[in-house]
Amino acid sequence: MRWILIFSLLCSINGYGQWKNYIVGVKGDTLNGVDAKGQKQGKWVVRFDELRGEPGYEEEGEYRNDKKEGVWRRYTLVGDLVAVEKYRWGNKDGLSQYFNGLGELMREENWKAINPEKLYDTIDVENVDKPDHYTKVVVKNEGAGIRHGVWTYYDPVSGFITKTENYVLGALQGKKKEPVITASASEKKSTPKPKEVLDYEKKNAGKKKIRVRDGSTGF
Image (cartoon, rainbow, N blue to C red; front, side):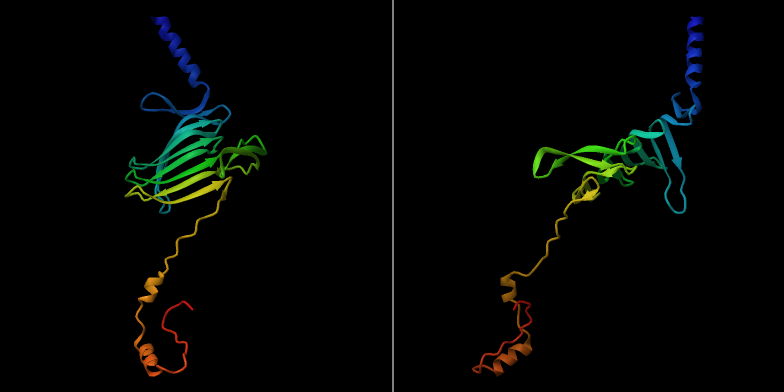
């Protein structure tokens, strides 16, 4: 039993020896580790205090070779979840969700990350007119995630969708025009003529027809 304890202790010392800096969480797990090369690795929990009127927050997730990787969650300083983001190579990739302080969904975003080791990358883009048909597109690496896919905005109270946007490799696709409400023909006919027009028509009844503006906008 004594040798087992000594062996376990040596393994723990050897494991922590790979870290230049780290902290031990309440559950005994290693957090905020920085390796011998100065790169962030493993699970991290970071707190940002309120600054210049901007609300503070905490975020948690994993680093891989100094870059965010996988799912990251963001909370208010009182512990309310406000964001769930996915990362790859340190940039947003896939679906990200954002909530208000009551936990109600406000927005969903879709992103595409590019391999930072490549100056250019090839991405499959789906043909909107032919679902499940893809075209390979070469994209230059700008060092950040690219908006790619549907962005959905919600009314946090009802949960209904208020707006959607579709991005293809950072470019917003054609927006639908807002409907323009116009009066129907029947509504135009039922619009009463101003008193001045009625008096003019009565005065000139039987004379050569004269075109009169009656207040309507159609000609």
